[in-house]
Picture: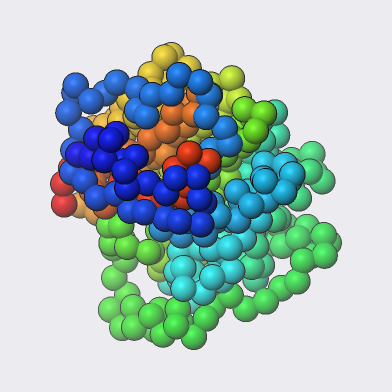
Length: 336
């Protein structure tokens, strides 16, 4: 495992446009469960987001923060980058469809005052994160779904468009030849982008957006739009967000439990690890176990951050003024 000296040597000092990937063995040893990236003074701003598509999302979010935008507006701008990228097959435009060939989207957003907005089972709208923000700001509700969500979206001036790209349609038709539903661990068929932000004032916000599991049943909703499952934060404590098989995260209220453990004094790494192991224990004999992968990212109020997953292969993007925008490999329970 890279030590802090190696990390500093390889990091991008002070330049957010530079990215570096840290490669290391990440099986956790008990003696390593001290506060991760321990910080004596709060680190802010700080952005952490899941997977490689978190790098460009972080970049835009950072730029918006530095231009004086609120964390919510900055996150929205950042998350719109992978939503609009047809090469990202698990988010927005170009995302893999359900088994009927329809792209359905889920997203949520939450601010430091615990205001939140969410949309699920939304079709034909490229930027569900922007709709989730409108739900938070312009309705008395937390979540809108399906046709009702679309009706609201159109009333807010959004335009419908076809989100199924030719490439995604080709892959769907190939899948239809056998029509076997079996998620592939760490492949882009269920990899949400989740983002957590600490702004200059030390306030925490979070968001998620996804096209969900490829080839899912029409109407399926995962953990990403569910506050407490795919995303949760408490501005007094910290925040957590999930990726992987949403059903397992929903069953355990995963992100809320990570935050609650941090409230009890655990570091982000300790909290993520405990909830991943709880999910493992509860799913040991479950039909999903052979392809189960879940991962969490978490930050606390001091700017400590961590990622932890059930199986190897999960990574996340981190951006701060000291080291720039870079990828870090999550620690994990099971080596694949």
